[in-house]
Image 1: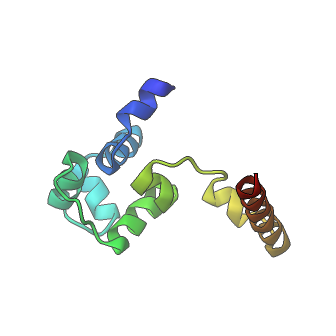
Image 2: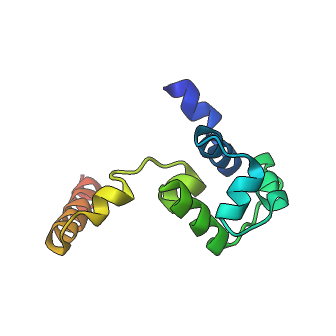
Length: 108
């Protein structure tokens, strides 16, 4: 597991990993994300350090991952699909619990 995390330490690594996992070539991913193959290739190679927020959102939505994971490699607590199945009350409860945990940690 640690070796996998080492390989996914950049935005480009994560995009390439998810693309290959889905069996897509660069052109197919570009089409799905409303961009060009040159742009996807540049992101994967680390030559595009400033992709637009719209493009990052398109990529994250297509891969069904959070922007946080895509850009920074942070693990998701729950998937978007799981989040969408929660009621508004449950979402609020989880948010408040996370805030409580963070506050508690800072008080120590």
